[in-house]
Image (cartoon, rainbow, N blue to C red; front, side, top):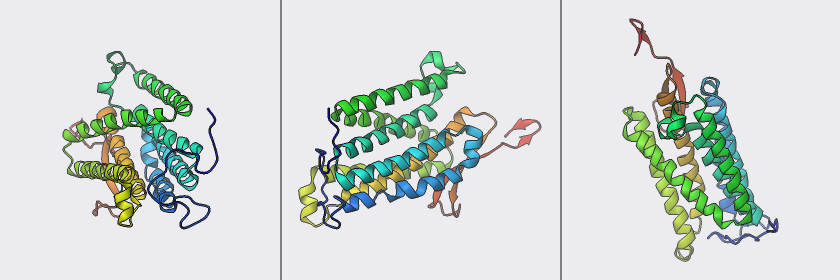
Length: 271
């Protein structure tokens, strides 16, 4: 299959009118609405440096992949090329698979891997091989991408909901509910832009896909912070995860991040 770099070679065209603002950018709002994918991940990398030093650099890979998602999505909406569409979809796939490989609950691993010290590494290898295979198949037949993305995003959401159900930290639960709400609003925008374009264009607002970009980024990065929190709480003994907000922790509406604090010792026991 020939992967075209030509403008408007993608079969997907979103609701926003093309080349209205600039003769060089097909969907202007859909392109610039990816800015959060480029601006916030470097901040999140900086905030999570102490976390990465203790728990591994994998979280930085996820932040980097979010930047790739933003660049790929901007390129796609600026050109509406088939290559741009595939790069956009593949980047999202790799973010999800990287998250699975890092934070999939150990209790949900195959029985033979749960107690195996190499179980997590083996699962990560399977995830990367799966992402590679899905990428290959997606380039052969782009419709396969939608299947993989839906198949993977649903269990990720279920896993987050199950973790929140047994969490007793009010701040963590609050952030989790916010993430799920943002995800729901993002899906609403995506579906309406795709299926009810005529209505939204008729009222002069064909920009819901741009709102999808903003909302899905906010939902995704908060979910990543939560999964990083649960990974420490469930799988790293001797460390206590704490959810903080930047720049002012009391607001709880800034940028959430995770720090680690060793539990205090009382009579030789952790508390």
